[in-house]
Each structure stands twice: as structure tokens, then as C-alpha cells.
Image 1 (cartoon, rainbow, N blue to C red):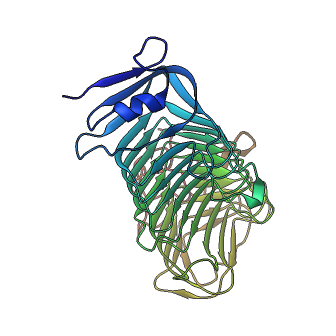
Image 2: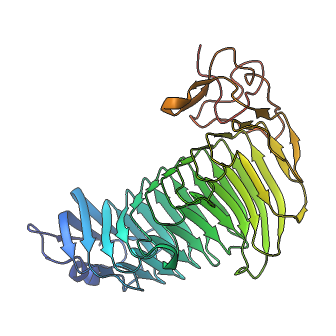
Image 3: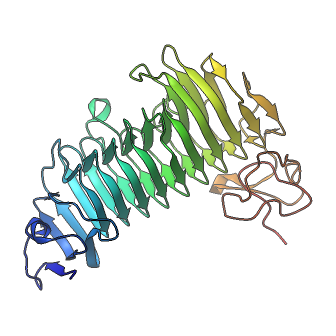
Length: 374
């Protein structure tokens, strides 16, 4: 029979760890809103259909403590766990660390400050991360290990949606060294990070869509970065789809493609994005080996002409197509814009950044936004 173990002034336990150590598959650890020192080390799995749930009640439960290499929330290799309305704060190492774990849910979860990575998944499978807020991580700077949200080294089947990842010292959301990642990153706001805000390195099968990214701080970091770094064994980036994203105000480009020394990029699809107001242009390519089918279509390159390099490029718009109010961050198309109905239907998404169905008129619009007037 599932049980609820309550933590806090009105509960059976004063520490989250004590309640967690009693919990069995199907149980809930209900944590009253407040701050709890000591962090949490998970020592037991849930079970299929019977996860162990850790839930803040009456507000957010904040876990504090040193953290270290195992993580302030140390998931280890455990599975069938859910964390809702919980925040980890002030780790001297990782905020959350999972290695070899599986079947995890982080819902309305927070990381508020860590010296190293914030929420780190290594070799971890089947994870859903929704409505999270991750900020202030990587405070050690370039010597920090992992990123604000790292999906790394064999992790797969991860979905990140509806999150805010902001004001972190290094990358925002990073998928790296995952040869069969099957990762979806969508409907997030990722801004003000060292950058890139969203980064995919030497991984395959990743969809990046309907995100707002911008304001990277480092001069070599784009809003969205696709790369092959030397640490990779496969030296391959493949089957990446980037669509319906807005990338603005970055210290480098809106989108960059980079190979550190040698590597291959294959089957990249970059469709219906809007890039504008970036210091080094909309698109920057620093890679020379491409294979497969690489497509650049229906994008707004608001920063001026781009070099499409190895891409099959068509139906893109260069310059300002008639943005509504870019000074206020509104990059919707105005009525009468030359980008309206001017896109290609081939491989175009069925919706825009706002969730508006495409096409709304006689044809597909170019850029991240479909028309929204009557």
C-alpha cells in the first residue's frame, strides 16, 4: 500500500533524507515549503508504474548543502523517481548528478546556484524535464565541470520543455557525446548564459524547436551551437533538426557550426528560424566536412547576407522582413511583410513558435512565426 511520508514542522520527519530512506516504490515524500539543509542522496529505486515521488507541498521545498561531486541531489544510478516543486541551492559541486540512472521526471524543478553543472545526466535514459528553472550554475567559470543542463555520454530519450535556463556561467542546455540521443529540446527560454544557450556536440537524433534563445555573453558563443569537439570518439554530428527558434542578441552568431579539429556533420535540417540582432551575424560556419542531406530553408537572416556553405539553401529571407517591434523583442511579421506566404512547404513544421498552425494563409511564412492577424 503506497504511503506518504511528510517532512517539515507538521510531518513525521525533520529531514528529507530520513523520509527518503523510509520510502518504497509507490510512496510519496511530501516536503513542506521551506529550506532543508543536508541535500539528498537517493538510495533506492522506485518501480515501473510505482515511482518514488519527492514533492514540495504548499510551495517550493529548497534543499541546501555542500553537494560536491555526487550532487546536492545525488541520484546515482537509480530509477523510477519523480521530483516536483523541489529546488537545490548553493551546491559547491553539481546541483543534481545522475549516472546510469533511468526513468526520471523533474517537474517545476529548480537549480539555484552551483559551482559546477546544474542538472547533469550521464549515461541516463528516459528522462522528462518540464517547467524547470536553472540559474547561477558554473560559478567556477571555464574550469567548471559540465553545464547548466547536461545530457551527456550515452544519455538518451530525454525531453526538455517549458524550462528557463538563464544567467549561467557556461552553456545552457548541452547534448554531448550521445550517438543515439533521441533528445527533444522545445518551448524553452534560454538566455543570458556564457553560451551557447543550446549546444549539441558530437550527438545524433536531436530536435531543437520552438525555443527563444539569446544574450550569450562570450564573444565566441552563439545562441545555438552545433559542434564536433576533439573529446568526441565518434567525431560525428548527425540527424539534427533546428526549427521554429528565435535567436537574438548573442555575442557571436545566431547559429554556429564548429569543428574543433576534425569531424563530420551529416543530415542537418535548419528550417523556419528567425535570427536577428546578433553581433557576428545570423549564421557562422567553421566546419568543412559535410555529408548526407543538409537543408537551410525558410529562415529569416535578419543580420544580413550569410554564407550557406554546404547547405542546400532556398526560400530564406535576408534582412528585416518587417518585424513588428524588434526593439521590444517582438519578431513577429507585420501585415504586408515580404516573408508572408513566401516559404516552401517542403520539410516545413506544422506549427510556429507560438503554436500557430502552418500555413495560416495561402502559403507558409518564412521565419519562426506564422502570421497572427485575422
